[in-house]
Image 1: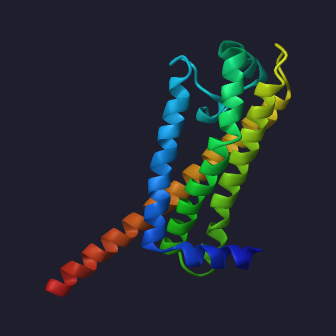
Image 2: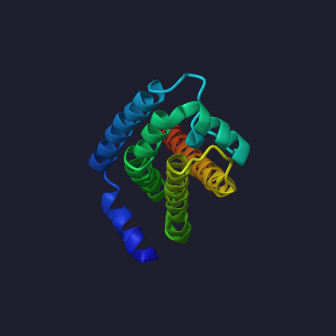
Length: 181
C-alpha cells in the first residue's frame, strides 16, 4: 500500500494537478464560508476548534437547534467528506516535491493521517448532531481526539513544507549569488 500511495503521489505531483487542487481548495473554502453564514457568528463548529469536551458539544448542539444540527451533519457528510482529500493531496504533493528519498516516502503518510483523522472527526460530529437527545455524549471525547490529531498532523505537514520550501528558496538565492561572482 505504501509504495502504491507513493507512486500515486508521484504521478499527481505536477503543476497542473496542484493548480486544480488549489482551485478546488478555494471553492470548498467558499462552501465552508457559506455553511458558517447559515449559523450565528458566535457559533464555532467542532471542526474549527482544537479540542472540546462533551459539555461544550452539548451546548453547541443545543445552540444549533434541530435544523442547524441537520445542516451541520449534512455538510459534514458531503462538503467535509471531499475536502480532506483535496487538502491532503495538496499537502502530500508538496511534501513529495520538497523531501526526497526514504524520508519523503515516510512523510507522505502524514497527510494520510491528517485526512483520516478529519474523516473520523466528521463522522463523529455528524453522528453526534443527528443523534442528539439533549444530553452530553462521551463520544465527544473521541471526536475531540480526532480533531486534535487532525490539527497537529496538519500543522506538522505545513511546518515541514514551510521549512523545506524556505530552505530551497535560500539555497537558490545562494546559488544565484555565487554564480554571479
